[in-house]
Image 1 (cartoon, rainbow, N blue to C red):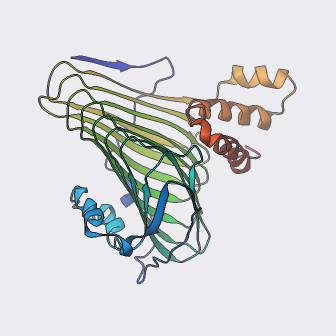
Image 2 (image 1 turned 60 degrees about the horizontal axis):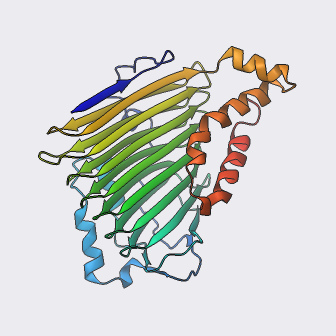
Amino acid sequence: MDVDSAHDKNTVAPRQTYSLGIEARDLPPSPSTISSKQSYQTPVLKGALIYRIPETHAGQNSLISSILPQHNTLDDSPQLTIGEGIVINVTASNPEPIRLSSVLDDPAHAQHVLIIVDPHVHCTVIDDQRSTPITRYSSHHCEVLAKEGASINLISLKRLDALTFQTCRRVGIAERNARITWQSFELGQGQSHLRTHLRLAGEGAQASVLSSFIGKGKGHSDRKTLISHDVGHSKSLIKSRHLLLDQSSVIHRGFIDIKQGQRGCSGHQQDDTLLGSDEARIDAIPTLEIANQEVQCTHAATMRTIDDEDLFYLMSRGLSPAESRRSLFEAFLMPLLDALPSEASAVRQELLDLVAEEVPHV
């Protein structure tokens, strides 16, 4: 067993405040009613069937039973309205991405998306969400089933208003030789409680979770990412790059779980944070749970601040202090932006524009 822990000169030991999660913050009152009206704008694309969950047959709805039971009210909340939402059944590869767009304009809103990718089909799905000042509570539930040999890139874009609190649960199952790549970018001043669990259920399966929280104001994100190697000869990657401004904060618990007897697996974690303020805070807690030999696993966490020498270099080339800082922010995020698939190239520029919009004068 080869287990490495990587550190560099900028690494700072995480604060020992593991009990501080979203539960420790001021939460909005529990909503008396939750809207589950269809808020998604969905395109009509060749090779993709899109319909409402009540219209699905029992076999598809039974996929919900794959979710591990939770014993926490916040973790359970996305399942309270699980009967509403949409199903996307991708039956043929298409170079054009499927884009789901939604603007939340209710005080409390619940969404549920189930994506089924048929065997040996490749697809890209973009889930674009934006909350308004009206939205106090949002519940979002997304499930993905990648059948044998299938491949899906799922890109999640979130812009949460400062008054919005969102609970989000994401579940994925990758069958034999299937691949799930989940890329998420969250921006704004809202509060989020995000739980991700991907299961590698067949040999040759691969799962990657690439995420970024770009926080400002008092924005906060409490995250837990778990990838389970249920079989041998499977691969996983958890990679995060957080940009924290003002008093924003992140707690990220990453878990890679390799079951007993499952040899030939590889699992890697990398959590990097750029602190753009003395009041910003990160708690990164990477964890490996390995029950056997003959695996390759690594984990690392780094936290750093803006380098004065880098700022001086950019300013000496004619950039203002604000432009220099923004250039460093963009460069920090570039590894995740470069990892976006070619068919989602427009998302890359959109994210750069959003970063410029979110941090215009820092």
